[in-house]
Image (cartoon, rainbow, N blue to C red):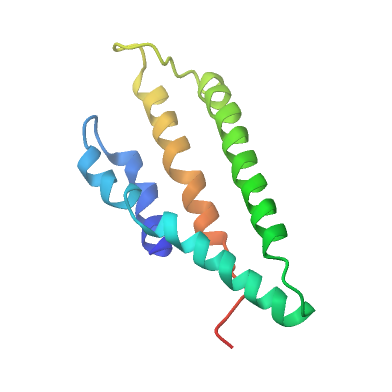
Length: 125
């Protein structure tokens, strides 16, 4: 599912205003909610097998910190990136097609690159 979302996301750049129905299936995908939690369980199980001790609380604490940190960084970075790209967030027709293209690019390309570049090393074996 992540590969599908990563493959489709770059094409959001070509959508016109109001084409939310094309974007909503990938945004609403349950993969983004459940897949990381199942991966966390795999990491905890593998660590318990390798070390012989249960460090689940440590992993959950680190995961929570990383999640909150990434949301904080994204919340700080995104408005600055849009400002740097010339996007005006005020309501109305304030933005040129170039600024709207910059907004679409910031929304669609980086997540796709991170999803495609992801290499999950834990296998069934």
